[in-house]
Amino acid sequence: MVAGQNGGVNRRLLAGGALLLALLAGCTPPATVTVPSASATGSGYLGAELTTPYQLPDVTLQASTGKDFSLRTGSTAPVLVLYFGYTNCPDICLGTLTDLASALNRVPEDVRAKIQVALITVDPERDTPTVMADYLERIDPDFIGLTGDMDRIEKVAAAVGVAIEGVEQRPDGGYDVNHTAQVIGFNAGREGVVVWTQGTPIATYRADLERLVRQQG
Image 1: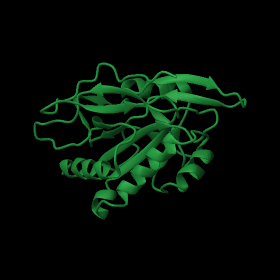
Image 2: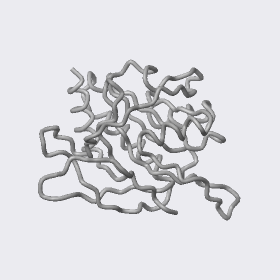
Image 3: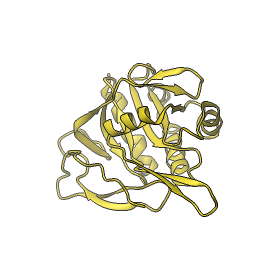
């Protein structure tokens, strides 16, 4: 499997060098690439800050609540955290979402109330709203799942630097969906301003999410 690199994304350079950040495909061991790291110009993020923020498209998907959800206006929380994955992913997707849940359990309550985490499925054929609701209930009941037709999902993914590489059949007759697995933090204007890759420590999520919330005023 080939990991899709987040091409064309400019990140602020960290004084003194760059970190190794992992972009992975599907639920396989990550391919490791060298990319510039977080800003040394005052933002204080531990993840990778984007010099040119992603613009979240005005796309409506179906939420695990059974209702339609507009990516730009569906949540009143000033911070939106997006992750692309799927419920049949055997390990990495679950691990990433669990780490996010753990980080949010460690921030102050006023900060937690201003963050919405959303899982956008890359496997809409299997991930119905009910399936996603059951899956996320076991991780964090405040997380929402989003599904829809693949064209819409791919449109959103392309706009925010996520590569959906396609389906790979397994010997047992099942299949995996290859995708890059970065987590993206959006501000109140729904601009993607910070990216975390697979393997990000819980403490990094915690610090960066609190900073992102505080910056929204």
